[in-house]
Amino acid sequence: MFEVNSKMNDERVEEIGENHVGTSAKTPLRDDAFVLSNEEKIKRIQESVKDILQTLGMDLTDDSLQGTPKRVAKAFVNELFMGLNPANKPAASTFDNNYNYGEMLVEKNIVVYSTCEHHLLPIIGRAHVAYISDGKVIGLSKMNRIVEYYAKRPQVQERLTMQVVQAMQEALGTDDVACVIDAKHLCVNSRGIKDIESSTITAEFGGKFKNKDTKQEFLDYLKMDTDFKNI
Image (cartoon, rainbow, N blue to C red):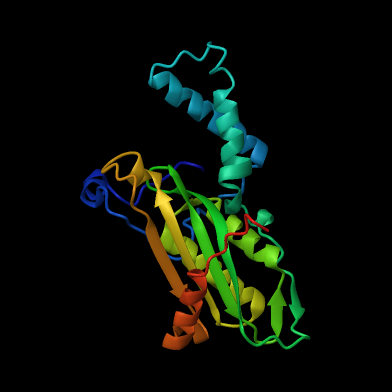
């Protein structure tokens, strides 16, 4: 039941090579993705990690390595990829905009910790999210939680950016949402080309943010100094 049937043969995989390929704005999940419980997934992943380490020649009787397969399995299911499970989706509580705030609201420098789905290596960066109220406002921490939820899964940065915007649009009932993410990909920084300086910027603009002046206003906010060390 759980056997993975690859849609790409070896030739196609080689053709794609190191190219940054994404398939859709939705995370590719099988229909049976949640048949297994978290505990069952941890047990299966633990055995898989053990097999990988043994194949690499590691001595799993060493005190430092004995607990590694279980630690990795628990981290995958409960932390690094917890955003795959809809049960962990944050409740995006919204409130009426009773004070009639009509300008854009920007939440800057939201920390992004994600994982590249091509090499399962970290993506580390910052997200900047903005919206213009159409009658509803959302709790500030909920914006951070939405970013975290969609980041905590094997990801492509373009998809992550789109998913954050779509989730905010759904919660607020407006298209007027924007997101910019600037992140470093360790699949680029620590392997392959090994360019430790480069980062990747992606953006998604909805509704009024497609307007040139509104988009520029948002981008100008991102340039503002937010050094609060002396406060």
